[in-house]
Length: 313
Ligand SMILES: Nc1nc2c(ncn2[C@@H]2O[C@H](COP(=O)(O)OP(=O)(O)OP(=O)(O)O)[C@@H](O)[C@H]2O)c(=O)[nH]1
Ligand SMILES: [Mg+2]
Image (cartoon, protein in one colour):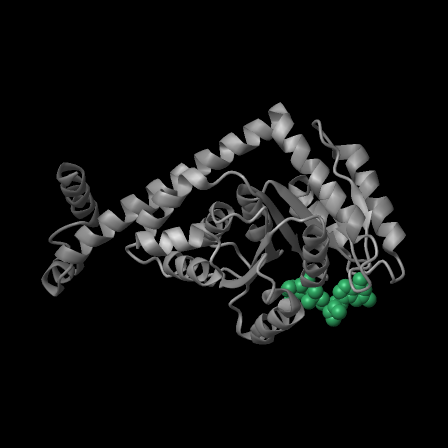
């Protein structure tokens, strides 16, 4: 295991892929891996790219990769694919679209499942991002489809969140409804070659005028990702935000709350696996039968499992 970790830390892509697979499959080795790489994390700029299905996120990410490479940065990408049966093709699509980078040793691209929660960010996405960070990627981009909770979850992982919107989808109304305005550090209005892009930009700016609080007013960038127009602006906005995060009190609070959320997530995971193990030991047909016949109650059983778990530690 140490050898694998060392190979990954030295930038070996196959070893990195293996580590991510172990973490993703919740292998018993996962905790040890995370523990040994953790001290090497905290250097990468973690960027979340989210937005409606088909907004052009992968196309934009692809162009951003080029831009970062031109600046001499190495890049890791995690594309969270919704595990919905309808988007089976999207996985292949993403791979093909980003394929020209796959051979470059400075770019590592990985698709991860979202564990049933449509487009959502699973707990292991954050761990995969940390692995890429530890293994020397300067920039780690996480692409998620913005459906429900995932836009909010991405804030917990990313230093900078890029929200990709497109004209003609009523996105502006959606943003206000879902309250996802607050999560964007940079707004990208993509498909600017279509009618209505300026209106979306104006609407976002107007909403910012009304609701914006804090030290960082999110810039609104217009792009045509397909042609690469505006991508340079998008990348420089994202990088300015990074500077802000590193140098402001607001950024410090954000990093602290991210670490807090991480400790809580690890705790939840550990406690729940201890409890599951103990419950698994006790769970028998006899016990279930007793529960069914009301000879025992779930509360007493839970209490006794907890007692056991706490005493055994
Ligand atoms: N007209 C136009 N089309 C674009 C632009 N950017 C991307 N597209 C097209 O939009 C479609 C979806 O692009 P993707 O990059 O796959 O979008 P996505 O947001 O990653 O999609 P999912 O990951 O499936 O949610 C593709 O057919 C792209 O070629 C753009 O700037 N203008
Ligand atoms: Mg995509």
